[in-house]
Length: 420
Image (tube, rainbow, N blue to C red; front, side, top):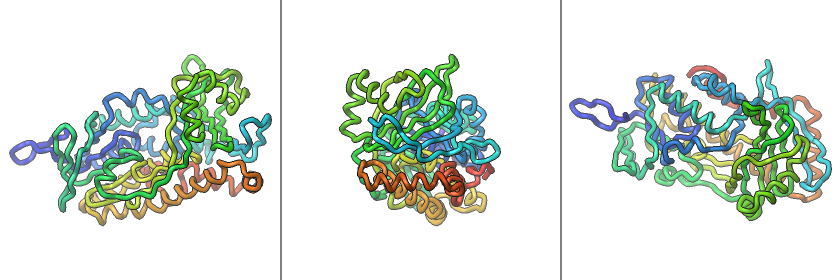
């Protein structure tokens, strides 16, 4: 229940209300509650109950985020189904080219046998975080949207679509890139569309992938092949993140399944034998969205609500976990010092911590997408030389692996594998 005993009556009163029961919202709530059991926390989510179980996608989880999940008591459940990325190759070519020269290779470890990333099915990740939330006594109110909220000096009053109002000291919006709560708070964004869409699907193939991830830079955008854990009956699988011009992507996912597989095979190749698409492919429009502020009175943004970036570097979800860890650490330390966890000066510490990093990553992915999603000969020659140089300089390769693992910059404790 989200109600607790007040002096002589029950009142809907919380310390923290999180809007959004995706990975970022769940991780934020669990991180705070685990460190400060005294705080009353709940999650409200507009999506229908159990819809998360139908998510057929998978995500690349960086080493730092895996350390965080271990600290939160989730990794033991996830690990048996997680596929380590053991190495990665990068090519630059046209989809019709018979040979794709490899310009850059990465060893998949960051030291002591720790992979720089794992591939995890979304429903497994979500389920593990939900189980931990239940163990900690965090209520999840599903199928109910936040209709409005007003921030006051001592807290915020949140009005839900079912007519219930909740008083909370802090409201956290983790409700996605098209965040309604961000708009309600009056926070503006810098936003533009790329004219591209990301096609996501799972592919079954004859031969094992060996834990290898591949990213092929093609004229329309990157085509990534990411290894998944084989099923219990030994079926080999990989996750595909395929960037195409939006018009072409819409036609591909809405068209004939045979035509889709022919186009996919041209890009995927037959190195792993015959391939077959599992389930229905889906496409999402791609763009860059950066919130002009991460906080307001009694209010904070986290995850895609604060920043939506191109998937070219596979860092969107990991930026969200970094938000969750940094926001939790800020709130927990403020509460330990007896400070008001929803006060603007407390929340601004979180904003200062995360804003530069997310803007930098947004700009980086934007530049990379513009650099690699074209077939201009001089540009292609320059980028291929650059990839080759990186491949020949071990220190540069180590730097990029550390970046991909999420272990650079001012890293929150949870991402180092430490308790708050």
